View 1 (tube, rainbow, N blue to C red):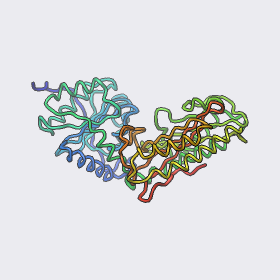
View 2 (cartoon, helix red, strand yellow):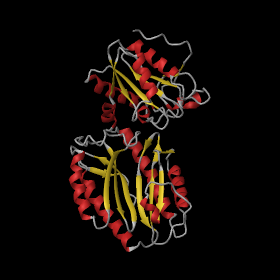
View 3 (tube, rainbow, N blue to C red):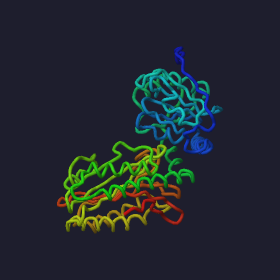
View 4 (cartoon, rainbow, N blue to C red):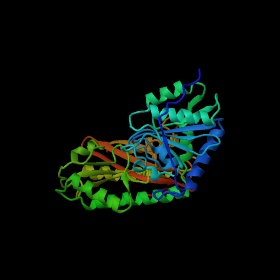
Length: 399
């Protein structure tokens, strides 16, 4: 059955310059990314692509367009014989210019029905564009962070019953996992900003200082060093003394006592790219248990990091982690986590189930080593690591 005609509510297409003033990379960089994605999908016989973005879930969209869907829903359509089409209802007061349009290189940027919770206007524009450029019965790959909103998924299926819709998130993940030279330069700047935050946080640490004071010093230093935002759902964690057991908690007005451990986790952001950096320090001289834990954690990091090598599958890390867990079991319980660094927190690489994924030069990872003990709390070290042809390079060197 043919889909009903779209309603006659106006969207708008905004003419866009080739070099928007806030673009972190040349438009050619984004076109190269799109070309790589098109090639990956073409190998699977998929001619069309729909990338979804929403509030705090715009990482894939940001990678391809630099657009951040702050307050509503957005879709990027990459269709045969067409320039990329970006359709959004993420509008402040219906004003496209004040809603991030200047942050994107995409020239065909269309406003859907204003109102961040109204999906209908967005969907009509999306389905109309798909039918204009993609033949009935063809495949349309869909990418979104975690899941498409049920309302959007249901309406897409209803209005495009004669198309083959399928998830192609992994294809885009595999493309974006390998960073370009321009991305690596930006990530190095980002890590330096995060390290400035670590230095300032440690400098603010003294008996009687509050967790909030340490956090304030760290955040101010990161922005002064070039960060332009905080990344992730919990971009800042500070825990001291017995609160370290909780690890992922916001700072409080608790005064830090001499000898206690303090855990500082920072997630600076620059142009949509986020990094994770974590350090644990003693306030003055540590207790015997705390000092033992910190020494053990340093040894774990030194043992695990060399295992991050090109052509090594992620599952190969498990043997190293098991060995280290045995070595430190008298001190505490060990966890080692590896995630990708980029515009999509925890989704930069294919999921944990893809343990056969080989590491490759150009991938940037976070290596997080966490040690927890009943008597002394929790300590963590987290660094950004670049996979190179020879092995790996730890980008974050701050002690």
